[in-house]
Amino acid sequence: MTANLLLLLASGVSVAAGVYLLLDRAMTKMLMGILLIGNGANLLMLQAGGEPGSPPITGRESTQYGEQIADPLAQGMILTAIVISMAMTGFILTLAYRQYRYRTADVIEDDTEDAAIAASVGRSTSTISPDVDASSDPTTGRDTDKGDAFGPSSFEEPVKGPEKHHKKKPESTAKGDSDG
Image (cartoon, rainbow, N blue to C red; front, side):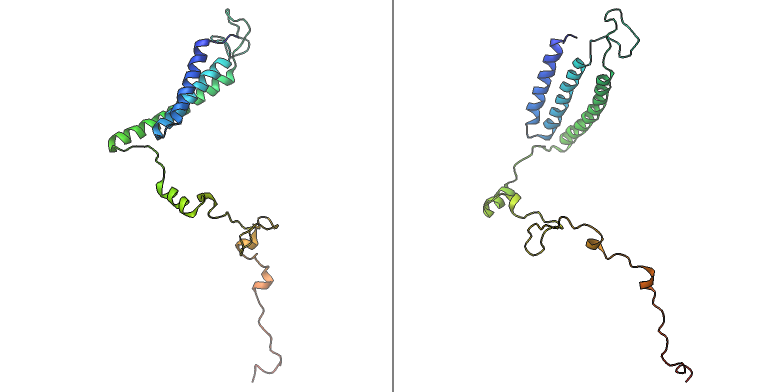
């Protein structure tokens, strides 16, 4: 199998341009970067799938390639990736139209209030409140050796048997008390 240098270069340029767009702060450019990376990966899979023109079915020899067949798995994966990328392209076009229509920017900015709160506390916001789960001590918040105590006791009392729910009427102690 020989590799096509032009397709390999196109794949490399596509992946490089996709990474460049992915590192931008605009959401539409990020999504376009994902599309370009996907197209570059499709070109690489196309190169790995076999010689161009060779049939993907065994038993069908071509005059040019003989008994060498192409890998049908790569072709199926590329076809699936093309369908997914077309749906992503439709989504990106919808976002671009919405930005044009409402004249909004999709640039992701730094949250200044979050940075101010983190600076006032003196540590990052991820360490302000610890994670607490069912295995934590309720008073100190530290982990215990019990593990996660999930089960019926943490939600409700287990259902009792029928003998506990239905009580019998108490019988009178004296036989003649009810007649009077």
